[in-house]
Length: 273
Image (tube, rainbow, N blue to C red; front, side):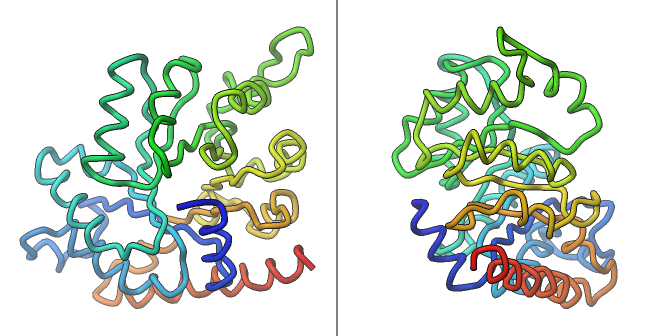
């Protein structure tokens, strides 16, 4: 899926919403535990309820691989169920060198046929380039994350110019791949930094988690991060998929997704006109 394809989807749906599929057996509604595959049963109903309002789905791989073989099978069934015209993100945060990265890339781009994968840049170019060898696939590089620990390293001054490390990641990584291959993760709780980030990567798509349950402001993300083609994928997981813990969980998830989509439509018209 190209940048143009993503922009067309955003225009068609008036949405830049990505739904995080992070199913926790301890949190999904109790009645689903009677199903043969509770994880897939949960995901299927979430997808059915939210498909009209989003353009992407992002399974966090930890929620699947922690269950062993049955979790990987739930993931496969989930991916098979997602319609082909949605952008899919493997939130795996992989990053290693040589043949190890090649195997990770093969896993998520060939075995599971994701459109993209989140990758940690700490080990540098040779840990990222194996993922960039796949035509039509995307690497979403961690740049500035929402968690408290992001201040441990990401804001440290580096190099002769003493710019923050996350800005050096943005600058250096552009030598590895094009804006049709690379996106960046920028947490919604760091929204005001988006203005600086857009000066470095004006045309790249940004994946922005942290809106909703983590406290990020959708309006601030749009104000500081939107470019002339939107250029944003805003992820919400807990605020949508756990909007209810009862038998109406899918209905409430749909309502939560619709509310975000309606706000996004307003922001698209406001900040791009």
